[in-house]
Image 1: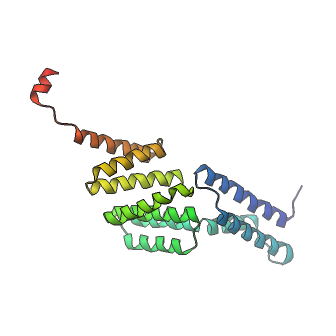
Image 2: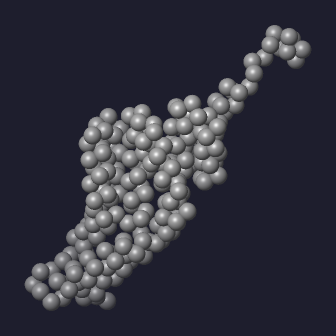
Image 3: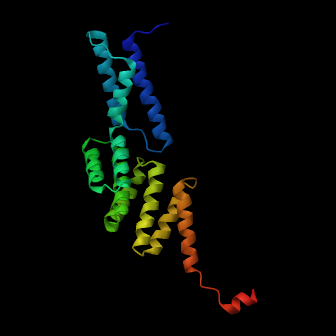
Length: 213
């Protein structure tokens, strides 16, 4: 049974919302009303144009438009992160600022902040990085910060504290990574950092102790 194109477009848009909404819940980011509204509005416009005007919209074109519009902030975050990894910090900051101006939802805004903090850490702006990560983690309880980004925020905050010689605070953050997402790459890095801290705290073995053992 062939469905009319306008109905097919409506079903496609609703399926997009359902799939990405489920992924958001899986990532523990909560449901974004803004995301759903944007996707539904675009779908209704495309369906209306196809049904009532000569301008036909293909399902593939609709999918591309919905993805680019609703994922605009995350795509810019990926670009900014790539620029920061290449040492182009000024351009990365510009991209992150642009992402914040494009009306991100709560989860998107926190994701931008996490990556801004990581960029500050890369260029050794430790006080700025600490302030950003502290602000992000204070908002984590609102339910919009995914577990991946919460673990990243704790780990990077721990690294910033360690570089500032604030070892006690660093240990707290590294342990928080293990509590947040023990199976993550950040947890493995945190375990290594904690092991290094334990080695530093352990007093050196004297010659007598070595012989006695």
